[in-house]
Image (cartoon, rainbow, N blue to C red):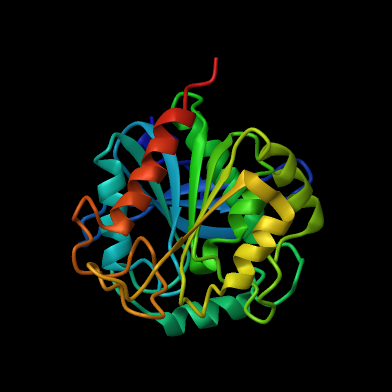
Length: 284
């Protein structure tokens, strides 16, 4: 059964080891009115967040950006799930189904994500690796795809230290905010990612006039991973699609013609889903 199944909910609010340290716990939460099933709560390493699950198939972790779990993010989750994937949506902050950048800024100050340092670890990374292990187990031992957006883009590299992660995707990675040329990930995580990317290329996307995810971020990815980082920069302002200058959100922005099969955003999602289909094969 899945993260949302009653069988997986513990009878007690928290479990403890013989040393008295709290272990991860899944708790049932009430249903909502935003087109999502009732979430589970994952507690691991002192961090606690709700997790929503959609669909059936190989698992994909889809992480929201600094504006929170917006309607566009939820719609993207449904869209991916409709392609025969199980989509896990961790909810880090803000009201469900609404955009709230102020909540995102306050969340940055809690420092679960490394938002400001060049190479410090993000405490949320271990929680996310545990979520990957859970998702793989629940989906029959399948490998896991991970998609990070903006605030959550860079932590994808730290998630690659978990061996079940097979398809890493970074969209408009923005961290650390104060160091455009840095990736905001510890060197040891980058070393592991570099070794794994020899067989599992990284997919990364940004708009060419994005000032939140500037070109220096992609230069840093290329310098570290070379051709194993497949970096796609999408042009803005050009006909026939006229994506506005300084656009930021590749998969959750509102762009005229996004459902046109010739639209560059459509091509990006197709490429991501194709990588998921081909690489998330069940482990023997």
